[in-house]
Image (cartoon, rainbow, N blue to C red; front, side, top):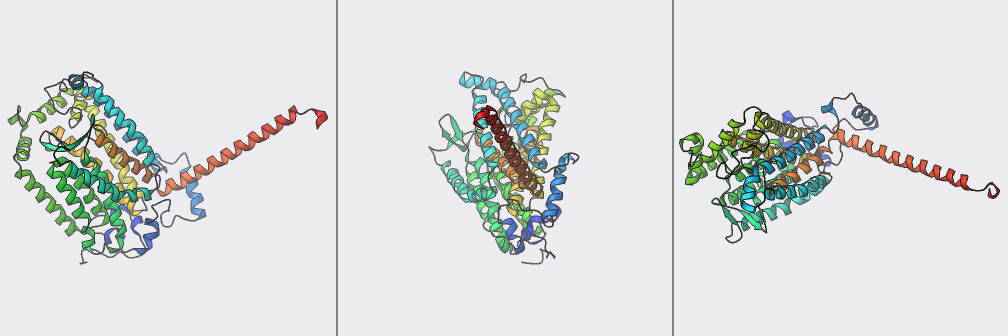
Length: 479
């Protein structure tokens, strides 16, 4: 390893360094050489406290602090948990309402019922909510154990979708596998698979990461192979979102700046070559510069998206009153361009609420990563947050006209079960991480102890009441 990486003194460990010390050019790949952190990071973060916070006296003081009602809301032990849960829940609810509104006319046209697409989305949400709740209670070792099997299955599905007769072609892309009335999009599962795999690989190799080659291999070749399969579909939007995952992980682990800049530059160069190599991609990029130059052809979708947003004004036309959602107008109203319908029906206020909810979700995810003592939690939480927020930014940027249209959906809001289920599973994992913050571990343990004591007390009182009742019913002569 060359001198690009500095040496950290003292006894700091990977899981306990402050957020400002992560990123390219910082100490040894997330403290890769700090063998003393192995006990903290290899247990799955089941409840280890931060350095210097252990011991009975500290634990007792912490319990008093976390139970104080005067504690600021953001300093409470489960603040990250509830911030994430509330923002994700509100986005999901908003998505269901807007899918019903946006899809009704085209659902009636295609299926004879205005509720068909909404019921499908509601079904996926009904599956996703239990998935989220189960994932939020799983131990960290389960997520790490799922990394390799999930990546293997995802790669097989990505290869299967390229096979004629298996993959379904729509709008020139072979991205879906039909399963009865539903379709499966393997690229959506590639995101969560890469989150788990990249994080687990780097944690396992943490002692070797002082050598930059171990930072690159096998993470970079692995995700490049997945990217190649996505580009063969082709799925440029999915490829962009997948690329965000390893970039986020490599940033947090402490990749030297020169290596990180080289990787980033190579990816940008490769994306540029791919963009100009296919005529339809180049045409889409050119139309992005001025969609009104050809509003009836290449700029049709962008122009009608702008019409929808501009007609909404400050307060919107009213829920269900969109005109652009009707057939032969704005395409993909319930998928890629659902934000345009939000802007048209709920106005600028509704759009800003949507953006704010994603901001809260992003803040909660990064807060969980920052407060984690476990290296796997820190890497995976950052990667999930980066993936969801980057996808939201790419989608919203395309709708408002500041980014090219890439066919990326709005997480939790747009129609599509293949996108919704992996996202909710990833959010459930983030909730599990939030429950393992040091303060949360202490608080949950104290709460569980209080509940056990309460149940024992109620059982004791019940036994005493039954004993007294039995004595009252017994005749005096028999006593």
